[in-house]
Image (cartoon, rainbow over all chains, first blue to last red; front, side, top):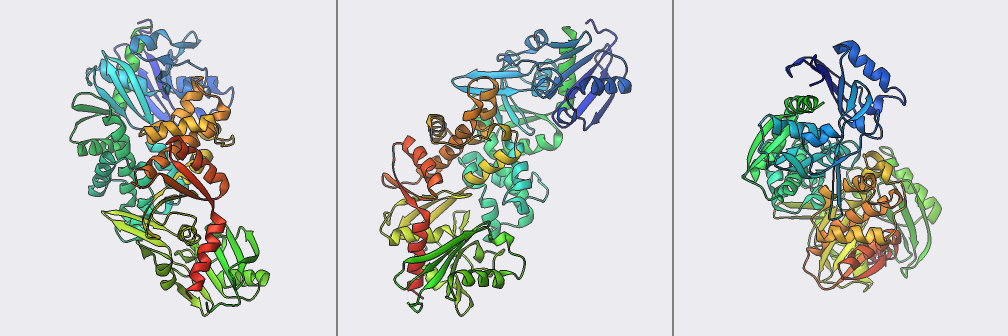
Length: 293
Length: 293
């Protein structure tokens, strides 16, 4: 590794960024998170935004992943097509300066189906590198846009985006269901019942309105509606994932409050679930890429 | 009809209202439309809002349908359960004063499925009364919330709400797809291709993100994205409707700019479509109810 004295890794998303100081052995010795996502940085503002990171964590080389490489970011890093593993990502790094590299996203294009990811690939491949996931397995990465990815020999061979998180937010903030969705979402019996229904029925576009109708007709308590709606959305999402022919085990990588919901839904389909922490997977992945610089 | 000298019919929705002066023979002799929907009327403001209608169309009895009978309206008119025909609606009119009646909505509750409609029932049953639709047929009523309704002996025997119009609005106004959905929606080849795909694939939650990915990867022009997204949403909606076992013909009732899109999508499934104007169906239905007063 050329960066033997360590480097700074940044998972730089649309609305947040998380920066980690990684020492030569790959261990994280300092870190911070703030709300300076890509969309909050003004045009031409990235050198300053990067300088701020170095002020806090030290004057080290930077390896940046996520929306920082999109057309709204610092410099566009073209997508690497599937199949994509750590080697492919490392070869396609986009350099902004001599000590600032951006990890590319991954694209899938086949049979008229088009899809893109940016940021999740580091976590998915990091989990493979850490030995935490079957290199030929099926992985789910919940978030604003959930990704279902199939791995083949440790590389991402195919993936599919489901807009579950964003749909829930849109319905909660702006729809006729808003008034019903203010409560907490819990992986409780109501959630599981809705998830089981959505997994076994082709339900989503026709089922969402029932969140309101069930309360109006006295079939459901209003305080359960958020869990019910989330169960329908995540169940429909899991139904998409189950269409992939793989082994029995499904790995869910991400933030624990989301992975627990997906794990509860997947369990309704009698499949084994392993939950992995997204942050640890990111650190494993970004270190693997840095080793190849 | 007790209202032999005519009456005023109002289709009073959430954001708009349309008022019609109907003479003793059932003909509409005057009308107006404005944006004084239910949500724009302050608490206690309905007597004034109704007085305004009489000022414009005359001091006649009023027959009101739509969200005016909801818990946000003038007085709540409880839902009539399926099967519901004109007779059932007329018997369940809710009277606010001696000359002001509200038409109830219709509910469906069976096998844990719950659904409600309010306003569409007058159009659906009006089309039956006018002889424009098979009394045992399948009817589609597009709008913010599309309704698929099966008729049996001229009554609504079952129905299902699909939130297609609202989902498109949410995606257009507030989502990551917003920037792609500013263009016009046309029943063009792109729309038909997307509709055919969504009709034959269980596609919606996983297909929406492709609207963005297709443009980013150069598979689709940005100016076609709105028609493509609409085709996916309406195709998924039609897929729901096609799950009902009925004859070959499907009647689509509503505003012509919407019925033409649904007709184009239904045609992709090689089914015969008849488009009916929603306003004429409303007038036929409300007159049938008035006859029973």
